[in-house]
Amino acid sequence: MPTLRVTQSTLSAETFRVEASLEEEGQPRRIAVTEFDFPITPQDREDLRWYLEDYLQYAADPAPKVAARIEERIAEMGVDLFKAMFQTNEDSRDLWASLRDRLNETRIEIVSDVREAASVPWELLRDPRTDTPLSLSARAFVRATSA
Image 1: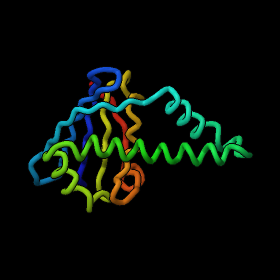
Image 2: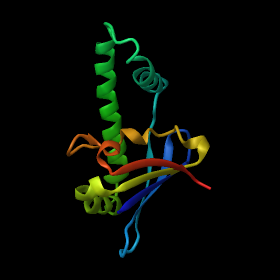
Image 3: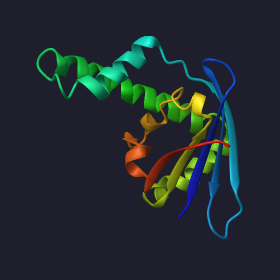
Image 4: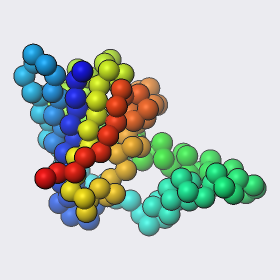
């Protein structure tokens, strides 16, 4: 099973360095490194919290309208994260091209320091071509802490 290991480092409050490595048996390890800004506003954080924690408990009007707005923002953030991750340089584009058609058999590991774990919502990562979150398409999508 291929493993895409995404190792996140925080350079500043909104700037991240990410090393994506694709590991598979019998193949050389492939690495792509990107640095990008990914600002998340306090409103984005509150909207995500509300959507994941409160919406299902309080689904009466006007909650569905609010949820629809947040779902659009979630999709937008996921596409923005994907573009920052896989469309900024040749190495990252090549890595994604080799993985795209095998995503359903791939394990994705998100590795970060415990303090940085919530700084990037990797679960939202969305391929704009298929409009599908990677976390729902991959064989496994897990988080791990760096040692």
